[in-house]
Amino acid sequence: MTEPLIVGAMVRTLGAYPSGWRYPGAHRTPQTDAEILRLVAREGEDAGLDYLFFGDWLATGPDLEFRDPYLLARIDPVSAVLFLAGVTSRIGLIATVNTTYADPYATARSLASLDVLTGGRAGINLVTGAEPRAAGNHGRDAHADNESRYDRAEEFVAALRGLWDSWSEDAWIADAERGVLIDPDGLRATDLDGRQVRVTGPLNVARPPQGRIPIVHAGTSPRSRALAATEADLALIAAPQRDDAVATRHALREIAERCGREPETLKVIAPVLPVVADTDADAHRIVERLLALVPLADDAHAGRTAFPANRSVDALADALGVDADDPLRAAAFDSAVSADEAHRLGAAGDALIERVARIAGLRVGGRSGGAGDGILRWRHLVAAHAVPAAFVVGDASTIADHFEAWRDAGAADGFNVLSAFQPAQFQAFTRLAAPELRRRGLLGRGDGVETSTLRDRLTGLRPVTRHDAP
Ligand SMILES: Cc1cc2nc3c(=O)[nH]c(=O)nc-3n(C[C@H](O)[C@H](O)[C@H](O)COP(=O)(O)O)c2cc1C
Picture 1 (cartoon, helix red, strand yellow):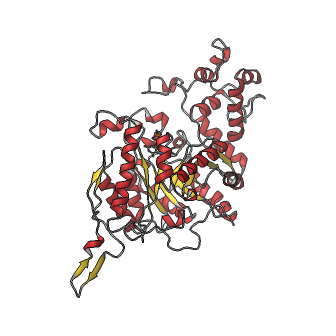
Picture 2 (tube, protein in one colour):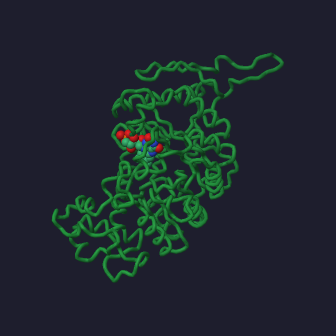
Picture 3 (cartoon, protein in one colour):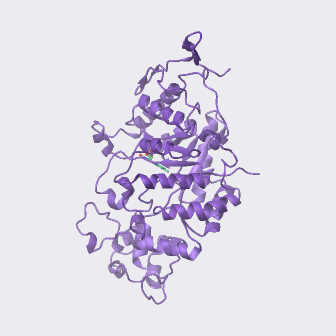
């Protein structure tokens, strides 16, 4: 029997789709609310998810309001996982750390502490950062280039591994009678003297229960792939189509094998944004609403700071290569897209229209009777093009079909589940889709195990330390 997929929640409490916070009933002020974190954590744990994942971004600014509003203000990831350590007991907790700006000793220390406090449920997602403003927040003149960032990331990983290996398994003797607390030979210096990372060690936190805390990496460049393939337990990929994911997973595992690693030990995780409801039609209506709520370049947003340039019919027409003098460029957002206009959008337009039909059940043509009538309007097309997402839309069985098809095609070893808005869409996933995934054997790596480490869940392996190895 094939083993279940790895399924985690990528937690964005303001909702992962940029208009999600506007959806009726959605949480609009999670940036000051501890309760929503608690609720998502407990819900995810009860549903049998393998981990909660917290991304990071080291700057903010008004431009994020329309692009990625969930980045504007949120609890930092290490604080979030430490908070959730106290309110969960089984689920893995993965925090993102930016290797360009973080200090390796402090990072090794806080993650080892999390691992001790949770009995081995810690994970760390290492990113090198794509936000230039982070430089100014950390006293640097400029964001380092890709090569330099990944040079540092590689040394950063070596530092973490060395520091986590500081204490051998049996170094803490605690023999009160003899008055011997530790075996000094079991406490090793790290002595890493790299070009960008220098750390002596040893670490002043006990050996983490997992020995090697699972490492996650997300990136797209060749250096990023090399880092993921050689060092990561989980590689997060951005794959819009199943074929892309198959190719990326294959490429990553090939690099892993060339580096002398067992390729199966590298698990590849794809993002998914399931919109779940009792029926496919209900789920389509949710997406129709989400698209309709994406702010567009109309009067309501005139003069707003850094409003995205791609939110007009004219911008869409440019992107699709429509003639400069085509009258469709003047279409009102709320008018229906006619069959003749759809034809003039060309092959790229066809693909976009097909995607909107798939996610929102909207069709070209017909007589429009007002919002919610299933008619494709310019508003939907502009929004779907400007704000793409890894939507999978439908009832529990439609969602499970997607997970199953990707697994069977070799596209992914698991999924990071995003929720368009909170908490209702996360709950729809955990309460409607998760039971169906479990029924099909697609979810439940931790089933029947009362206490297991995150590493056990991900790989079933627990490596010995460098020092303990024969
Ligand atoms: C699925 C996925 C999740 C990511 N999450 C984060 C994140 O939380 N924080 C961050 O700074 N960058 C994140 N990134 C961005 C990467 O760290 C990386 O900087 C970006 O993809 C550019 O690729 P490169 O670093 O390989 O050049 C993510 C990337 C992917 C593909």
